[in-house]
Amino acid sequence: MAKRFFAKNRKFFSWLLVGGLAVVILFSESYWEQKGIIGSVVFVTGLILVSIAIVGRLWCSLYISGYKTDTLITTGPYSACRNPLYFFSFLGGLGLGLASEMLTVALVILVGFALYYPFLIRAEEKKLHKRHKNNFEDYMNSVPRFFPSLRKLKESEEYIVKPIAFRKGLFDALWFIWMVGILELIEALHECKVLPILLRLY
Image 1 (cartoon, rainbow, N blue to C red):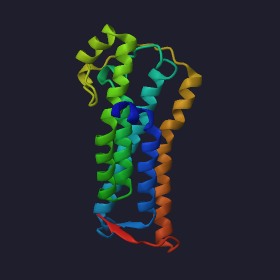
Image 2: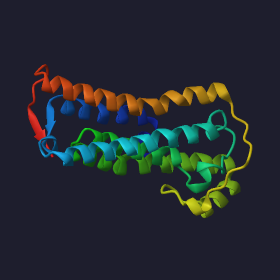
Image 3: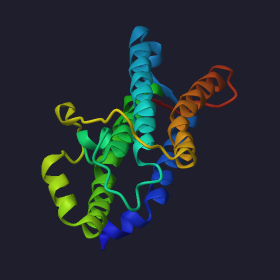
């Protein structure tokens, strides 16, 4: 019951977490901002993770767009792990937390992901098992659930892409870099004294 509830309300809980963090970030300053190179290193690390997330999500969308409902995809990123979209989303969320230069925000995202997404993944696995039965069992037994294994990566020379479905997936990946821009804008508004700083977070 709990798995079904979390899976059904996935977007609500995601936006609840995003909204809560957005309010905190709007009125918070990073402790590391005053520590010279440390803040820059944290920001660049976050930007690297966001970049990997964007490329990874586009890679996943290329393979799964238009096929998710009826076909069990087991090539490309789906040959390295069973939930690559969630893995790259995790990297992107963690990257955004670090791009805020507040390790507290990154930690909240990490904990939120660890608490919520296992329910979602198990609920989706149940659906896939019901739809694909033995094929999915074989897939489960040979491919890791979350963290990719590059040794298992398999890609064919050609793959039929459904461009209309893929185009929709493009925007799901791009919002990560847009969020980095928003974080920089908030920092500028703090420096201009347009937004008050009520908290100073590590």
